[in-house]
Image (cartoon, rainbow, N blue to C red; front, side, top):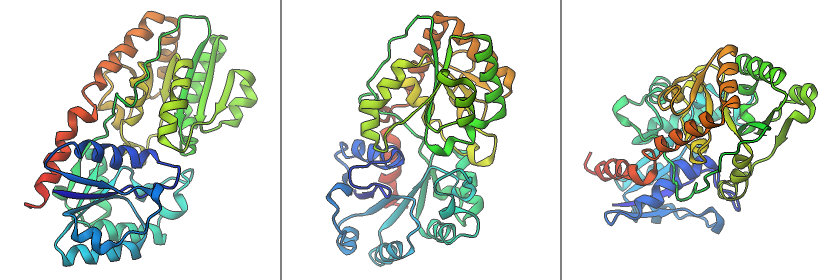
Length: 355
């Protein structure tokens, strides 16, 4: 089985998180299977692809979402002529893209981008996605039947995410959130904001760090107790350099989300990343985290301000409990490694040419 995979958002000296998690990581591990010959397009080489060669020398083209109708038309026509399969991966409900997302102008309702993207979804043979909820969204906005949308959840490589932070028992408690600027609105979530502000009023040793999204009003109100910092646009540099630094500093991690369909269709990737460093977390009580967080055992789920306050405070005041929750979270994600689940990719791609 020959697969040509295209991380559609890659650029020179930059590998995006979505390219890595959804295309590069699974394809690298699938290439270790003797039944598959996998090629991953390397954007660093900046080579122009000869689509005729790509299509004729491979059985399957695997790419993540694109809005370019002309390049897709070329590859699509060649794939149809030579009876090759096209699989598109989608990890976000792009039809519901929010205004604080940098991609909003491309995917907003009525835009050429969303029209082209929807047409491409209708044309590909299969779509892979992260959850049953997102599959339902895809089928609602496209002509795809459920049986043509394959759920392949996000997994983690603990050999790559190899940093395990040592729990620290000191007087200063740091609560940390990381995520792109698209999480600005999520960090304005009234339940979370009210909860953390109440906690900071009660406990003067609490400080809050956001990596990516800046919240000016928190800086104005709390001064040095709130800090904004930057991650890295390249996933490999983030994992190697920045991620260990922030996780060593953090005592508690948080993942607030607004309650809407766009966020319900998100994945549990942040839980995997946080938990790889054995960090105890409080997560929004919403579909993606409900599927993996066992409340009170490997993390906490919160929705109201009282919930956020209660569970962050419980973790802040009890070092042993922080350590217990962090260890349990790490034990959980050992079942969600790409190594243990690569067979799901092998079964799916291996069966495509027989369908």
